[in-house]
Image (cartoon, rainbow, N blue to C red; front, side, top):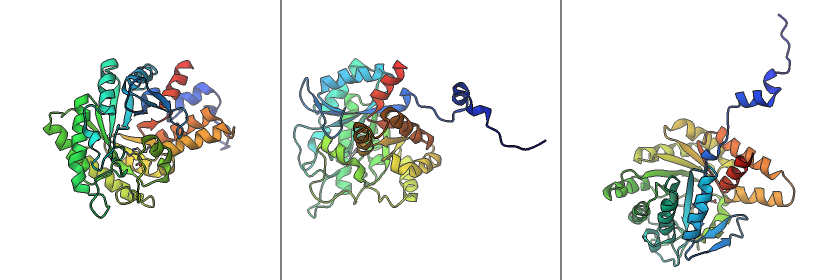
Length: 325
Ligand code: PBG
């Protein structure tokens, strides 16, 4: 028989291409972040994240219902407290915006998974993810009990999943212990196990008012020159009790995502962070790209690289569009 290259039939029809596609994207793969602020009836556009809004707890509950109806199974809550202090005290208050919103959301849409971001940077006046020693460095071990207290109050408010994003050493074990001791043995932990010190978080820090007032986060976030280090961080967090992991940022770290997803036995998600969103939005505004197609390709790319789920500011919008198709 003569061996000749010919066009493959697989590529000919859309139906055939769909049948053999290795990756697909569904609304149920997506997690929508929401920023909760104090007050009532508040819906304020976030300048740095066009299309995203600051929502008071009542509005967050309203939004959560729409998100769930569009087919998105989970939201990730960030909170902006009424006041900040050196210890980030509002992080652990039951009347804080995130806890209040969680209670209302679980009442309005019990099936929607509420993931609470657990970190101090939105709650401290200095903007660091932990408490500071007199020399200005973050005190890892002094921070752990504060994070545990925040997680317990989030669980008490009804959060299904606690997502520590602070990057302190030993925090997953500390949170697991704290949650179990308080009776929240069923509350899951989604660890931002692999979080790089990145310039890709700019708009988020504006949205959350969490930019560090001095220095940067290189004392506790990962050095982006290191890829294999991610495997160590990931397996440590799994051994401490993490039920799921996140790799963050997304697109510039797809190699890391791919190797972590292969190396651990728990589900791994990707976070398409604020600069990734801002870049696409800015270029789309200038007409430099086809927004819907680029969004689709960027999300499929993260899934292809190994993400079981994706935290993305496009979640709600993507799901609504998918419903309309
Ligand atoms: C920290 C946190 C950050 C993001 C999520 N959680 C910012 C940081 O580490 O400075 C960034 C998310 C984004 O850029 O979209 N609590």
